[in-house]
Image (cartoon, rainbow, N blue to C red; front, side, top):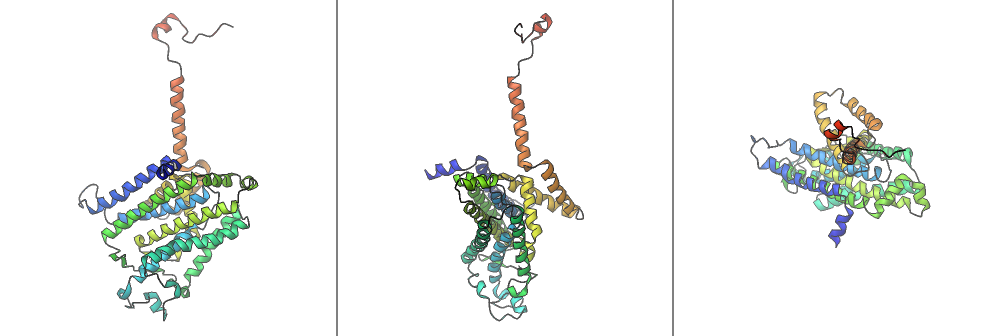
Length: 394
């Protein structure tokens, strides 16, 4: 019964997407680990963390779409939740270095020894335990989103004003994490990771496992978001997006609906950041840059907001293009990204997924027209001058 109810609540596109992601979680690591280097389907080692990074970005775009596409909250600060999850993972990885650091201090990370810290700060306690660190990956973004959202939504801050204060939030965190006395590595951040769960983080098997974990986490996020937006709560979220005042007049507590979506979205973004850090090998305050959060908005808009597939497709397409063009045309990449957003806003308001939907709808209409159109006259009728569609006499 529960399984049937779950499948009824899920979008068919989401189910197919989950199946593809699970297949990718198996096929990509297998092509790297099992196939020889000369095989045409073999993926080199450097591509595995690169593809894993794309999946974490797709997860971040999906998190933003939950609040923007379905609830009408344009957040320009979702990079903050992504970075906080990344810092929680980075703290765990730093504690795993132990005496293998430059200063061989078993208790303090190298940057603390360099800054003459005498003891570990209290907020680093427990971060040497993986499950405690994973709890922080979820709790820290969730608490920040709950406090921020409760104050903002209770005050009925909406529209561009809400976007501005979300951007101010991530910029304030950027300035705070830049400070050396915060205990997070300052400008350099956290890096030089060695192990994760006792396995060398640079080993090919570990990287393949991290990629698979990213694909599975994205699949779970797709299931969760699809379940939410197709439920009764999801219908209320869409009503809030389209007519907030009318929804409030009908008796719904709009601020609670927004708060729920905002907290769930922050948790998804934090998990994405936690998976991002071990695959790229560093986390620093630059992840709090407001420009990063704006770029996530571009990914979502290009793919098509208000859909489950769109943000994932947009994040992967834009970042694959970014990886190519930053190497081929590094001077014009930012202009190309800005032009892409302008073109999407003016000509593709529903993104790539919307464009595909319009093409399919046009094809369906054409096929229906062809089926209902009268057959062409037979040659014998044409020669005899017979009208294949006689009209009644007037």
